[in-house]
Image (cartoon, rainbow, N blue to C red; front, side):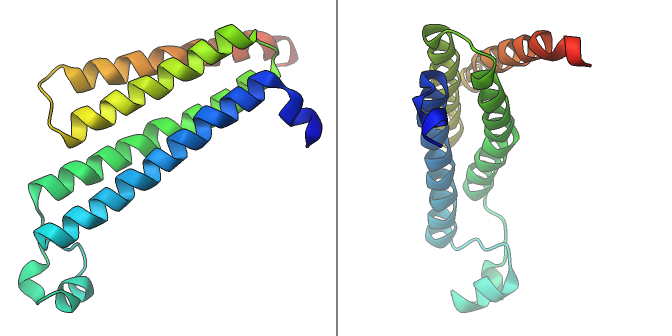
Length: 149
């Protein structure tokens, strides 16, 4: 384990990866809190606990929060895989940090744009910006391992 932590690129990746996982937890908590505030529960047993079956319903803002969380899972989980493998192929620390930072900032802006309903194309641009380092890492990984395929 000590050897892995001494890998500066991997440690940098872990830093950003953990921040992104924490962000995902925060969005999940926000979704739950909005459900409670709006009294819009996905399950009848939750609605019954909080006032009755009339609260077993959808709410547009709860759905927005939920979609933001789903989008995080669809994008952050692949980043965690790509970043871990990318860290092992020996990129320079400055280039790797740039990849990780761009992805992190793109995802933060994407979440803010989703939760705050910022004007289009803010969310789309944030998504696209965050995908660029992932594509770059994926291509570099493929090049590094192509000889073994």
